[in-house]
Length: 119
Image (spheres, helix red, strand yellow):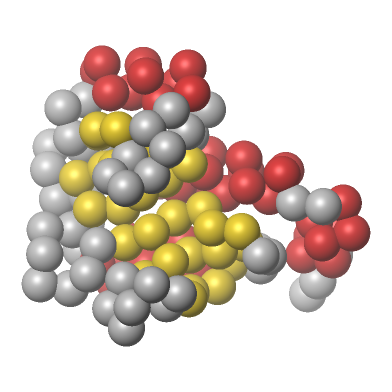
């Protein structure tokens, strides 16, 4: 999976958008007002940070060497994923979806409903 494919996966989710709050090169993907993914800067190995249920996060780290505790994030709730490693693309797709759903559920009801009811 390359950078453009990963970006497209993030942005296919309803209400998802790209932001650059930290610098001009580190892409942050949000749903509503909250982040559900972060992509490493161009020129560096492609990694993404994804929110994850703490128990699932630990299990995924035990199974896949390309999944590590979140870099510069809460190690309990975020994983850093080496996208260009040996991890199957289907697993990356599932982890992005999981992150999106966790963050979407955590949004205030009005914000969540606005996103879900938009065209």
